[in-house]
Length: 277
Image (cartoon, rainbow, N blue to C red; front, side, top):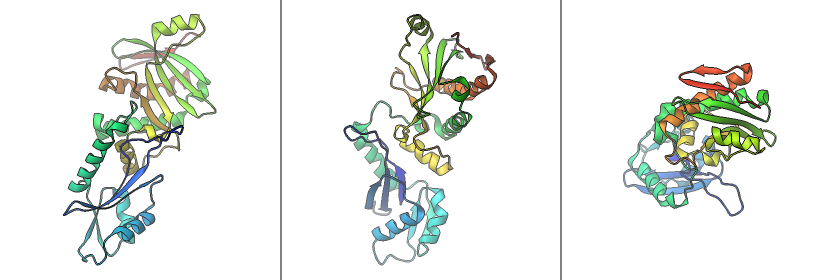
């Protein structure tokens, strides 16, 4: 039995994108899917146990095991499903095949914002990103800067960029974006701003990869509703590379520092300072 975030977000016409939860119950020996269902909100353990008891065949043998892939559910469901042996099984053949097939079927509905940090960078670095992003959100550097501030950034390859740190619409639109330094200076002279190249924003949970969200749930790493960090990758010709990922992590740590001190930071072959007003 499993409860996971859907592998892709869905969107009704004229509505905001959403990412639902999927419930599925399998007979592991035969691979038969006994039940599957979508819910907008994850079921609590007691609700999940009730759902399973409703879907399980009657007169199951006493030695029947309930296999789970979420360690957080193991304790509660062992109590609520006490007539069965509840076992943690991070890998289960037919369950994994089902979700792999589902993802293949849904690829048509994926959009340019879909990406998965877990697949690209592994569990340790994915957790490092989300923990650092949560610390940035808690530090709230925009409250020290003001609603919109621009920083001059020289990355590890000595490339000059401008980073715009913003908080708009009463704290509902938070993040920072990368701008071409030459375009920024030219546009400033005309009283305008260039289009961002890429960046990070806090918002709709639907934009975060389903596997990344499953990892956050397993690790108990939570964010406020509608303030999940997601990376704007649409304009990146090569996608989110390891180098860009590391630059992003560095800025998540250093922007709060410069907001507090107002002093230029030089570290790890990078430089970050306030842009001239």
